[in-house]
Structures are given as C-alpha cells and as structure tokens.
Amino acid sequence: MSFNITLTTVIVMLLYCIPGYLLVKLKKLPAEAIPHFATFLVYVCTPFQIVYAMQQVEYSPYMVKYMAISLALAILLSALMLGLTWLIFRRKLAQTPYRICVCASGLGNVGFMGLPLLQALMPEYPQIQSFAAMFFLSLNIIMWSFASWVMTGDRRYMSVKKALFNPAGVAVAVGLILFFGRITLPGQWGGMVELIGRMATPMCMLILGMRLALVPVRPMFTSPVQYLAVLLKLVAFPLLTLAILSPLPLERNFVRGVYVMACTPVANLVLSFSEMLGEGQDVAANVVLLSTLLSMATIPLMLLLI
Image (cartoon, rainbow, N blue to C red):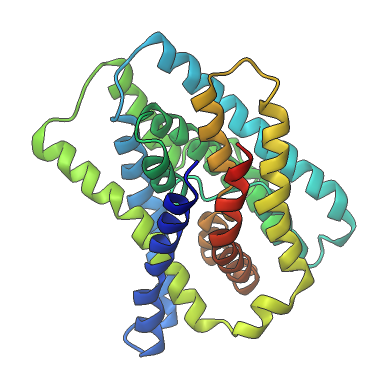
C-alpha cells in the first residue's frame, strides 16, 4: 500500500485536532462541554456514518457473505486480544490505567480513522466500507458490554440489551433494512446522511484536541502502562490479525482492508465512554492521543507488511 498516501491521510486527520485544542486553550469552550460533544458523536454522527457506509454498495450474495464474515471476524479478533490482555493484567485491574490498557488493546478507531483510510487507500474496493460498518458494530457491542464493565469495574454494564440496542446497533439495523430492501436514499435525504456521517471523523479529532488541551503533556509520554497499551494496539493486534487472516481462504482485498482497520489507533470510543461513564478520562485521553500521534509512523510502516 502507498506509504505516501497513508502518511498524508493520517497527518490530515491529526490536523483536525487543532481547532478543538485552540478553542479550549483560548477558553472559548469550557472543559464541561467535552462530554456533550462526545455524546453527540456517539448518538448522532456515528449512526449516520454507518448508514452512509452501508449505502455505498448494492445487494449481492457476495456482500451478504462477507458482511457476515466481517462481523464474525471483528468480534473474534477484538475478543481474543482483549481476553488475552485481561488475563495478563487481571491481578492489576484495581488500577485504572490497567483497565484502560485492556480496553485499548483490541479496540481500534475503525470508523473515524479506519473509513477515511480505506477510502484513500482502496478506492477500487468500495465494498470494504460496508464491511468496516460491521467492525464498528462489533466495537460498539464490546464497548457497551465487556469493555464498559472492565472500565468501571461494575458488572451492571455487562448488558445484552445495551450491547445490541445502542446507536451503532440501531444504525446497522437501519442500514441492513435498506440494504436487503435494495433501497438507496434519494437526493437530499442521501445528501443529509452523507453530510452528517462525514462529520464523524472531524468531530472525533476535535474532541481529541479538546482533551489534549486539558491534560499535561508530560504524563502522556512518561507512563509505561500507556506505552504498553499503545504497543499492544498498534503492533501486537495487527500482527495477531495478520497471523489469523493469512491462512484463511479470503479475498485478498478483504484481507488488506481488515488489516488496515487492525492498524488504526486506539478507538476514540474508549475516551468517549470514559467521559460518559466518568472513569479514567485522563488515562483514556493519554492512550488515545498517544496512539493517534504514534500511528502517524506505525500505520505507514505496518502497512508495508501487506
């Protein structure tokens, strides 16, 4: 995959952080506004982004097959990585940084960074955008259940209802109805979905910039646990993904697309959920910010392997 295109795409996405950083630093926005932005991202932008991605392709047996494979693989890969990390750190989970580390290890920014990367790197394979929606659904299922429990230490957050009936789950359901019904949103309706959906990536990075303006820079670069979380997500998880996918009889473009998603930095939803749940916000912000910054180097380099 093109090193230059990958690097440029990642840099452009990182530049979206600057307005949020400046608004908070210049006291044009209070810190209390960040959870509200996070809620808007989760409940509005994300569902529209998913529906828009699923509108990019038409119904076919091939799409049905690979959408099912995508969802199964997404759950398997993330659950395997989180499970392994949880076993390694299970004796230290009383400490917030280790709980965030577990959540971060196998949950990538497959929507807000993954989709723009896939659009830039694989324009000849638009189907991957719908498959990415399945990965985003998996991310939300895990975040609204196991990851929320790990993050808070409260088993009440392990809920099948929350795992399935969440903004992303509802959006995928709507997208599937349109997909199987072979319905394409017409004119201005489709334009509205696209416009709000495309707001997701800038909004995600805007929130990161706001949080960056509030956290001390030194702790972000000096905590060994945070570097460990980033190493697990940016290096170990992609390598695990590649090792599992390589022997499988899957289409080459599909494998490449899944690997791109595996290389993305820690999911911004880890930070969004920490904001909403009121647990480990600074650590989550540091891990997400550090992984996003370092991904400028790791994504182009890791994609040289495929």
